[in-house]
Length: 169
Image (cartoon, rainbow, N blue to C red; front, side, top):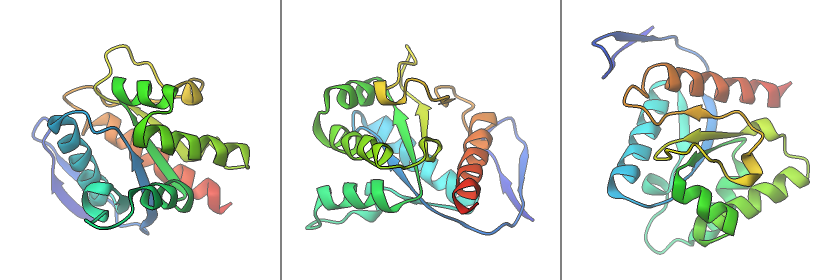
């Protein structure tokens, strides 16, 4: 077992050694330095649970094509998490900028047979909890709380692992 100090309530987290989940793609909107940093922290937390992430902040380098990165991230990763901030929802619904491009690809993937459960919406920086229309009927994980590393993170890890297992069945 791996023992890791957690930033919530002074507990120690025990993470069972399991097979690593294949990587997941994180779709989000760049709308503030704090939000961008939070997404990076989420990626780091997921790696503690043996979940690799494909994230532009660490996997996209100067000179590389951003649209190709988005296309490959949304189509080649078995699971995608969508950080549904207020601005993400607005960009997704209006098909604007990078978020709009990724949503167009994801909705087409669903039309082509991608299982809906492989796209997990997360609420963050979104007081109204409104999700993009294409995710409206999907249950979401609310990480718009200070203790997001507790139950919400555990729920996300379980959801990613469950989606990965369902894909393999």
